[in-house]
Image (cartoon, rainbow, N blue to C red; front, side, top):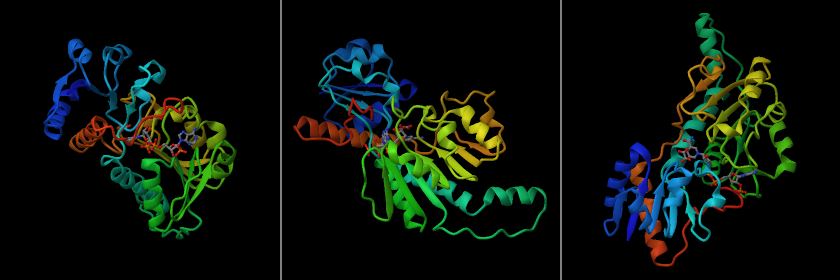
Amino acid sequence: MKIVVYAGDDGPAWVRALRSALPEGEIHLWTASAATAADYAVVWKPSPEIVASFRRTRAIFNLGAGVDAIGDLDRLASGVPLIRLDDAGMAEQMIEYVTYAALRCYRDFDAYAEQQRAALWRPRPRHSKLKFVIGVLGAGVLGSAVATALAGLGFTVRVWSRSRKEIAGVASFAGTDELARFLAETRFLACLLPLTARTANLLDRERLALLPRGAYVVNVSRGGLLVDADLLALLDAGHLAGALLDVFRDEPLPREHRFWHHPRITVTPHVSAATLVQASAEQIADKIRRLNAGLPVAGVVDRARGY
Ligand code: NDP
Ligand code: OXD
């Protein structure tokens, strides 16, 4: 069984991890001839030519939860499943990242930082967790884990997704018809939606303006969901209180981008949930064994939905 890895500079590390997780496989770095003979492809950000080079592969594994970097899913050979990472250690990291942001906002740490700069000793009134409504866009593997963790801390938590969810202690909003009401009641918004044709530019001026005055925005999914200029306009107008951004339309975020210097924006370099190489290699190895045994696997991307 031949497995061929295309992952840029990280390729050799993935080959080592897969060799250790799947000793029965022959694992190679991508070359045109290796790709032609591959039973399974393991890829991250492949160009259309790289995707086309896998001529008889039985499945394509994407080295991330989001598959947007694959591009047009229709050009993949029909009948060949595209399989993404599901969790593989990312949910725990997302919980840490979004919880940090929620607590920072809920406990007014940005306001205290400003007060410190003015040597101002002024305790602020405590917020009510019931009234501090947290809205999580996306209730899949990561969104539901984040929502559950925040509900466990006593916050009022809602999720918005395509289909209705049942998550203990979390209210579910579903579909476009319920988005406006969801946003209007959200004090702290965390975006964990995949980037698809339907979600691109979802967080534009019109939708962000539905958030109550003083709301805080966290984007940990993909930069393409958020319209940069619209976020900046609403921050500058004082409608939004702040934003924590981990993902961007162009990565690395260009040096001249206003996000770097905006006083109400915190930027991190796409680190909210790093792909853990060994844990992910083990997940892929397990799925390859299941596919070989004719068993179903989790994380198969629905091409029509794009995630
Ligand atoms: P999932 O596919 O498990 O979940 C996606 C969720 O989004 C689902 O609840 C789905 O609804 C919902 N959704 C998709 N399209 C729509 C739509 N048009 N309207 C409403 N809801 C929609 O993804 P994960 O939770 O695993 O990951 C989410 C994203 O996080 C990834 O796609 C990736 O972009 C990003 N990510 C970022 C990382 C980082 O380090 N910054 C790390 C890992 C992931 P439904 O359940 O009804 O289908
Ligand atoms: C992912 C990511 O999609 O790391 O897994 O962004």
